[in-house]
Length: 346
Ligand SMILES: NC(=O)c1ccc[n+]([C@@H]2O[C@H](COP(=O)([O-])OP(=O)(O)OC[C@H]3O[C@@H](n4cnc5c(N)ncnc54)[C@H](O)[C@@H]3O)[C@@H](O)[C@H]2O)c1
Image (cartoon, rainbow, N blue to C red; front, side, top):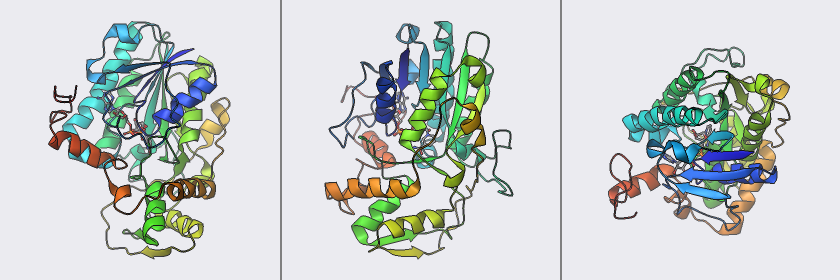
């Protein structure tokens, strides 16, 4: 299969490339490169081909000849969404639909969309929510995912199959490592300061999934018979990885025994809390079996941290924190306020 992976120079992208290449597929990456300098490991597997371009400016010819698009490119978390709400809508929603329309127009048959469990947002959590449950997004980012799923649905027809993978919050080691995700971040704090600090009361539900399991799910969705995935949403994670934030912090404290756990409860701003039912993917997404658990994930991230000698200052730098990198590109004049590269760096 010939596969185009957008957003391949992000956190999940390198693992996605490796997963598809290991399965024998031809992989082309497409990315504007906001984090191109944030490579933190030499083990990055290059794609077979690469297009450095903003998805808002992709041409139909660039999408021709692919069997499947795996669409990761996005301003991809809540803080980025709050930095530039209109850009999150423009890139995550409108440009995604533009890419999908163009892909469909040149004969691409399948569109695997990286959605998010955060679309369940402020869930009532009386029972784990499944794909039919109500959507209560509480961030600009999550709203963009809801709108994109809906509009992709209207493009579905006999020749074009969108599939929506609602990923839980990611963790794990990537050649383009991020430390702005809950588990990765707590391990970094524990290792560098000896403290695991949660500012909320720790009660919100936050399911987790390893980036290798996310990539496996995308591969399964790309390879599955059309009838099993056509215009379908799948929650991606596992039922035993529904955690309260306080439980995630306790797992980190167990994994870094020298670290002291503090759940301060001083901040109550985060409305997101969702406990998710992951049955459908394990029953109906052929071949999908998540293999990671939080203890193994803590060890992997902890070993990565130990091997690098990062400090509390370096791990909070723009190399690992997306919001800081985007703010740096804007203040440096490398990108315009609408996040197009200026001639300075291109
Ligand atoms: N990381 C998570 O916890 C998580 C959870 C659920 C869903 N997702 C989704 O998975 C996808 C990948 O996430 P990630 O963590 O790798 O994100 P990331 O921010 O690390 O990478 C996103 C990539 O998209 C690129 N990009 C952004 N805007 C672009 C544009 N206009 N044109 C071209 N490229 C552009 C960036 O340069 C970057 O390389 C995203 O869609 C995200 O919403 C992530």
